[in-house]
Length: 238
Image (tube, one colour):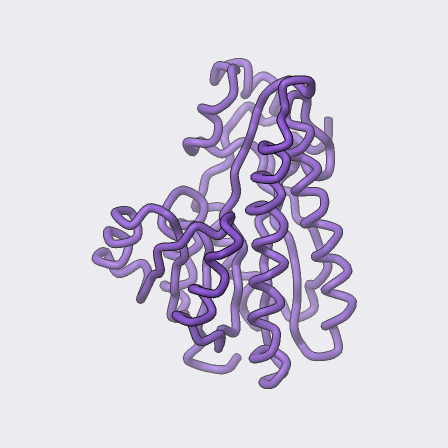
């Protein structure tokens, strides 16, 4: 593994993203986080979990020029973690909901991947890790467009993995089940109702996801590419 390695993580100062930032930092990566919440980013930097950060809303198209001007895309590791979740009946889902979900959950990941690939190809080493969702493989009632955006991310990851495999650039997905972050509060379900659908009757911890992400971003996982790993306490089994 080429050292020191620079890693870019979207949504890297809260929830799952923060756990991934911590795990990569502990493994020796220099972590830069992108996010919308400057306070959380500043706290993460002060705690030593990230080296640098940039405040940016990746769902807004005109921000891409600003990003290109402020960052040198010499990252060996990219973790596309930022995402949004909309839970409501299909007939209440608006075109704005659809655009917002795909803008952040899929298009931002695709754009950042393309921006980072030049450096990865040049050094013939790279890791792209996309945080999808178990909903992207199983579907989810009242969250159909969210599931569709994550399903698109999974399909794109598999295709990109095939394209890059000969260059020692891996592309994988982690698909979490229910993690106790602020996203679950956007449903109308109680904790008891959520856990009743999970075979292991437990939440997935963010630290589990961080540990797996750190492994997939290292040399030890060089033969793992094009995979979608469900970390869901059995939820994907039905």
